[in-house]
Structure formats: structure tokens, C-alpha cells
Length: 290
Image (tube, rainbow, N blue to C red; front, side, top):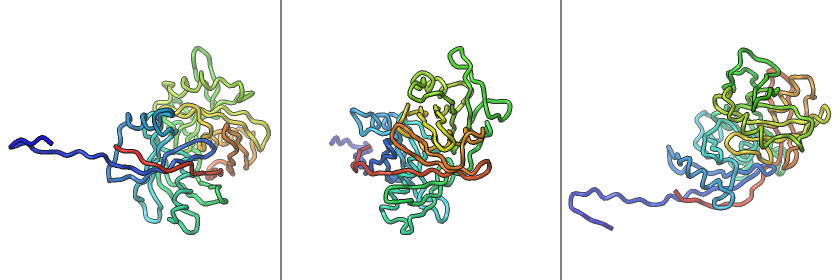
């Protein structure tokens, strides 16, 4: 330790942050309690921690803070693997609900959570199944920071010199949805990043590639904003169902096949809340230092 008369001595110590690693059908997260008020890691730290080979590895980090409204269990903030903070995460919210239930925070197994994307009601639907209410899908262009003269079921988007048809909806976060003949051959790697960063989506956008197999089932792949293609995307599943159902293609209950497994989406129709159900599991626990 260096001492010098008149100098102000400052001591720096690493802060330990305990986390739980969880996933919903392979869409994976770290979830942790904010250690101090105003805790705000840098984007560079999130990127290092999210790295699959040299860090923990995750699609999103969810930080739990004290509730801001009476009756809520927690307020959660969401950081993508690229370090950007986003509004909502369906599978992440289900994992938060499962973790708080394991902690005994809500003995009845039902709770209300808060996020930048709005309130989320959640309840345990089985030993590992969690259902969440993500509110009413919002198709207004302003709701997803999308430049369009008016609301429409279909928009034409110019990408790499070609026009692509998309649907657009907010599930607390922005989604563009493309109908494809087969998700197996969909150009996810090429079109996903191009649409995510399209100039008409001023806050970037999640991009879903949807194959409708019948009125009660779809297949889906999602390129997530700031994370790339993931094994599952909860809000993406809801967005795809909302877009297809608004076009009259689906019934009120839909099984969504994603790369990691099966999700269930229930939506009665415009103006009604949309529900997402699927598994939430713990992988391991650990800590990182900042």
C-alpha cells in the first residue's frame, strides 16, 4: 500500500455477485439480485460474462431489484448478451417466477412481476411449468419503434435489394415475423441480422421465422436482438402466434415448436392478454466478481 502525506487513499475491492443459471428450453439466463442500489455493470462486462467459451455463457442476464409497486414480487431488468438493456423477455420472466417460487417468496405459486415492458402475472402450472401473462399484443407501429405510415397486417420491408413481407407486433418488446415455407431452410443467419438492424426499426427488433403447420401448431426460429438465434424465445412465440392469429390462420391455443422444445401460447384475440406456458429449469449456481 502506498502512503503519502496529503494523499487521499482509495481502496478497491472486488464485489461478489451470486447468480443462478437457468433456462427455458435452452434459452438461457443468469438471474441474480442487485447487490447494491444503482448497480450497473458495463456492456463490456456483460459481453465477457455472456461469452460461451471464456465466460458463463447466456442469452440474457436478469437482475432482480426491489418491487416498485405494492403487491409485486420483484422488478427485473434484462441485459442481452451484447450488453444492451431491453424491455421484456418471456422465457426469462418464467425463470424468474420459478426461482422466486423455489425461494418461497410466493407460497401460493402465483405472483406479479415488474419490468420495463410492463407487469407480468405468473403462476406455477406444474412441477417445472410456468405460465405468464404478457399483456395484450400491441400492433401499433409506435409501440415497437417501427417507421410506418399506419398499422397493417403486412408490411413490405426492403432488405438486400428485395422486398420481404413481415408482420410486426410488440409483446412488451418489438418483433418482426416472417412466414416461411420451412423453418429448416429459412434464411435466419442472413435475414435475421439484416432485419434486426433495419433503419425502419429505430430500436432494433427481434426477428421470427414462422412455419404454420395447422391451426393449432407452428414451427418457429427466432433471431433475438442482441443475442442472435436462440434455442427458444418466449415473446417471439407469442409474437408469431399473435401475427398469424390476427390473419385468421390459428386457433386460440397453439403449440409452438422451437429448436429447444415446445411452448404453449393462448390468445383469445385482439384486446385480450396473451399467455405463455413452458418449462423453466435450474442449470447451476455460481458467482462472478466486479
